[in-house]
Amino acid sequence: MINPKVFKAYDIRGIYPTEIDESGYEIIIKAIITFIKKKLKKENLILAIGRDMRLSTPKFFEIAKKVCIELGITGVDIGLTSTPTFYYGSLKYGYDGGFMITASHNPKDYNGVKIVIRDNNRLIKIGSGSGMEKIKILALANKFQVSKTKGKIKSNNYVLEDEVKNAVSHLDLSKIKKFKIVTDTANGMAIIYLNKFFEMVPAEVVRINDKLDGTFPAHEGNPLKFETLKWLQEKVLAEKADFGIAPDADGDRIFFVDEKAQIVRATIITSMLAKEILKNSPGEKIVVDIRSLRNASKVIKSLGGKMKLTKVGHAFISQKLTEVNGFFAGESSGHFFFKETGYAESSVLVLAYFMKILSEENRPLSEIVKDYYISIESGEFNFKLEGKLNGPEVQKKVAEYYQDGKHSWLDGISVEYPNWRFNIRSSNTEPVIRLNVESNSESLTQKKLKELTDKIILLGGTPK
Image 1 (cartoon, one colour):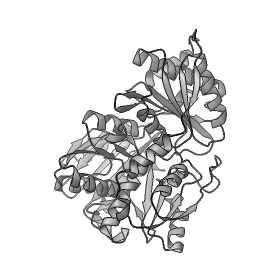
Image 2 (spheres, helix red, strand yellow):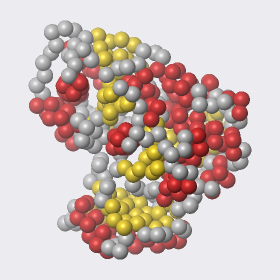
Image 3 (cartoon, rainbow, N blue to C red):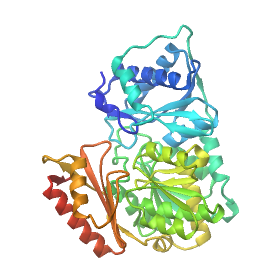
Image 4 (tube, rainbow, N blue to C red):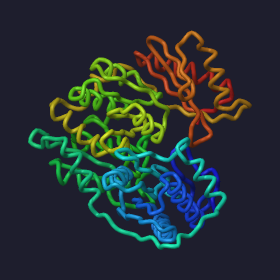
């Protein structure tokens, strides 16, 4: 069974077994392989297969292997792995692409698949506009030909080590301080690459929620929900650690808290890494998403970099980074992308840069961060639409209130003034609209946040 709504803008994801079950998953994998064969005009594909620790994943993995054999391709099992490690393996070894069995940061009852195709030294993430619509059509038609020749399953056990070695090669280990670090991986996949990273980079690491467990016994693996960071924050204070690390369940997002247990916004990490990159590679293009960009903009422009804007969503950001031949991209939700990893996420590269910056600065993280907070961000606020107006209609009405500002419709409506800006966009994954505000001061941000919230409620939105 397949519920058509599992085909999302960035990946395929649904509740098991009510929205996606074993028979539905088999059809989806057949559709993915058929799509890649047609896209690459190639029958004897070699595709990487990664998988997370969710309870339904072993069943789905067995189905994936069976389909590879039936459709005559080589599936390369890279084992239990994070999504960035899967991306690295799909690129590094010259495979035609691959699929990762995961539901990202969603709760335990979800599962799905992320898909990539390799094009020389880049990865094309399959989402809205890059093939997801075709995969959906193929899956719902459920008509596939079994190959006359049988495929096979191989293994590659070297991906993780190669990925981490590549990240560590950016460091002069003799100059890296031995930090005390707390990690909370929410019983998800990131513990695997963090363990390998800290085998190679000296640190005193205090681990919590570090056993792989698809039931997520401690908390949801979604650090963008800041309430899930409280265990990390408490432990950082108790241990007097230098900082804390919180990746999401499949490891492709990463958040940090400072030594005072204050959350460091992802846009600040973008600014820190952009500065480090532009010091050594001046004039490079840095991609940021439309939600909150004033902090990164200041840093990038002051160092002679070129800032490029993109729609929200990891597939869209990878695509934009590829289009502009950018060096690095940072997303407000904690995804970070690099040219050298095929325009895909790499949390271990983020960590390598991060430790290099902290070692060179030789100041507490809370002090370093102050240098980058030029603009005060509200964070994201969500609204269900229960009135007569849909998301685009609400955006249009709000835009009319702010006609004197500079408008952009890249992703929803963004309106910019000299000392503040906002973005309202429709979610790609939920029936809600999302609001972000940023300005020169906390008081102005709060004032404009309330002003916009009141307008959205008047138009039929309900705070979520």
